[in-house]
Image (tube, rainbow, N blue to C red):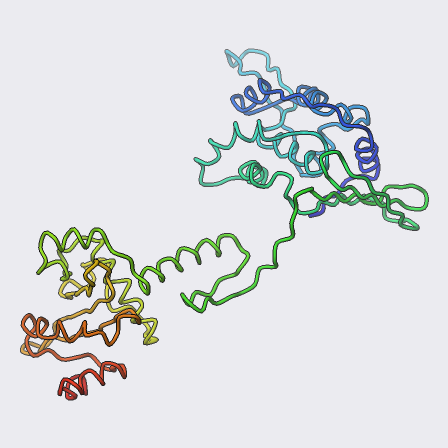
Length: 383
């Protein structure tokens, strides 16, 4: 990250950081008032900085210097008048989040300033808002990023310079500072590295072999979505006992496996996840089951489960549109570890009793064709 400022400001920051650091004040009451009021005027903020790190004042570093780096502009804020005819009394002031962003910048530059007391007071209200500014984003995540942010470089406004001489120092808090000076001692740039910064791997497009999701690895939002989808995939391929299903099977063992338009959402979701696994495995274009029964009200699902209540597969039946045509076994999917274990054979007659001489929707997998051949029904699904 690079910010622009003047050579004079860079030189002042270097000289300030070269001085011994004192013990900063907490200013908790100041930050409480700022969080409540939402504004702090320039004079009060300058006084606060003097209390936080006196080295700023000794080198003439004012809030405006840091505000300009972040492109923050103070605004005229007035004491609320009692009447529209009252005299307006105002001061140039900074918003609370902007003041916090400047404190974060000073901390990143190596000053002994702790922005977290103010950030903590602002964070709760920011979490309740759907939209935030860039300074507010820094406030939101300061507690996670403090002393861990990437290197920060201040670039000067010097255009013509000769030579580039480097000097370095390390603060008591572990910040590594490097200044580049021209041959005439003009400050050209200042780079600061945080003590706990660790370079993150470059984000790259990755496809998970297990869940099949393509995502940008190293991008937090993509990583989070991948973890969620991966867990859902694991739950289908390597199922654990399902307490809701076990409870329903104890109450009504004959009806528990069946799922129709009147079934609760959690049961329809169990079918949907296995229908999605079937679609992915067969490389179909769409999932042949909907969680919302209104989209396919006549479809009937069946959940295969073991004795411990693990839902290891599902099937979907639906009537054909033409009257007199048999029902269709539209799809069936079992977790790989449970295939060829007799689960389908055990339920085949149950399906025949409910749906009659049903047909199968082509194309059929090799495993299903082999099953039908052993059953003596190779004619099914042949169209």
